Length: 481
Image (tube, rainbow, N blue to C red; front, side, top):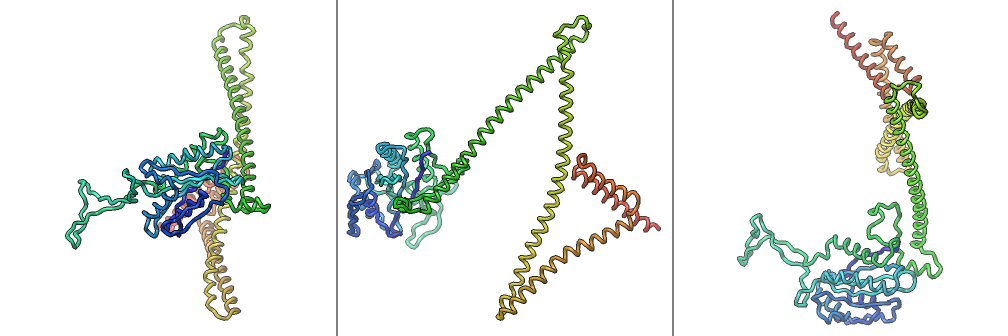
């Protein structure tokens, strides 16, 4: 796949920038800013391999002169925070030759001028493996008469009857109606950024082979398990060209190595999946054919039961073979049953392990929360000026809080369990209760393959219900007596 890079940004007065100077740098020309009189001379700048200006339909012909175009922009954009230009920077696929690169950018610029923009674009290539294009675009539309249009226009809000909404009357007696501003064009909409990025990918793909095609979407949006590389830039490549090691270039090399390994693993998994699918299809067809053959033989056997033994032919005798096949199927079913029992036992063990793991997680969470509470309460000692006393108070408070926090749940478990045991001993300590408990434990220990853990819990719950009934009857009898 070819490299895809497309960034969109703006330049304006708020950052102290000049559209004339920016155009001179990108085109490698000498331009004069008539507003300030500053001359920007970049005629000695290397790497500019092509440059041209493309105009929209309503633009005056003299805007084809780069200096005239951007001085006109300075003249109309007077606000201190005005945006002077919008720039699109493109990475040119190295798979294309120079003529194809110029044609691709020119085609892409045509899609922008069709929307009413004037474009000043240049191709840069310093033979360092980073050919790219800079496209400077005007941010204001041009009216049909060839003059600059307003960036926004006033639009009145209407009610449900289509009438303007009255707000107030000003001091001059003029009625004021509710209104809002709308952009003259939609170039500032976020959807346009996605559209322009996609358009560049589509233009490049018309020049690239199938395996080299690019995609404007991120790897995540494409559903690819691949790590994106970072933009290196001119400085990083210059460091590498001088024999140094750039952190960005090194990071990209590591990313490419990981992506290569990931691609190899993915291809191997796909190959294994294809082989497995083919094997399943083959075995499935064999099984289906075998079942069909058994059914046909069985039907033929039933239809010929009235014929005597002496009249049976060799072919009819062969029809008696399903008995052996049936026995084989029965043996397979028994094996499946044994496997199912083993799976039940494994499930019981895994359920018990998960239950114990959950209890452990609860204990860890409680201990963590208790430690945080103790630390926050112990921070009270920060207000003590004496450092030694502050440390002693800090750790003393921490230990007290931890001990109290640990003692409370242990006390609840101890006294609660003691109370349950006393109740159980007083009301339910008889032969039936002991038998139920022993029976439940015996099933869990000796027959786990027949009794999953959840069924064991059902037995214990029934035991608890039994205890509750016994408790109620005992109290009822005491009340009667």
